[in-house]
Length: 222
Image (cartoon, rainbow, N blue to C red):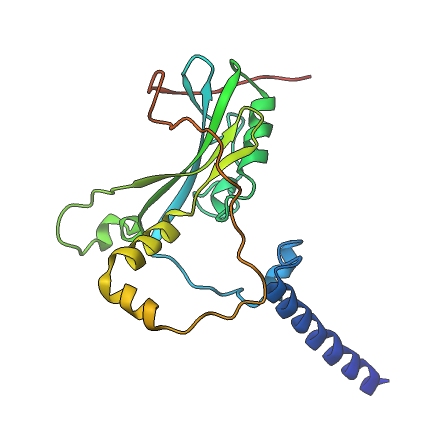
């Protein structure tokens, strides 16, 4: 009996790892459930030197901008000061979050919604009494438009994350890295790269209308 339980445990354990590796390799079902985090191959993919926050900004028909996050009824913070949307590093759920906020708030007709990334160096998160860097502790943020949605919160234009955009810029502008890439061997891939859909007409957030961003008002429902 004990031998059967031990063999079954080993088979289940190795089988789950094989399924996780195959799922990640073939890009099939690797994000189907939070439990997949424990079996996919890249569960420990490293940490960035920049802190990231996501902001949802809606543009009304009049050109007025509305800040949708944090939500008017209080946001969910699983750990620390980061809100729920800040954990969406792949920008997969911004549209559904914006749709839920707009459905439960009072506002004019919405023309477009923008998912804006804010990034700053993590060293500015150090408490004041531990600050040992030269110069004053003045946080500087970099803002990047990640996804543009239409009035129905459907994505019409998507870009790489700020980290990926900076890395791509360095690869394209650094002559030494470009030469290394030219001399490197071709990459063998099991699956085809995921291409973004062709962008539709999207109005930049910096154009048209009042630049002042107003918070949305909470609509009480019975």
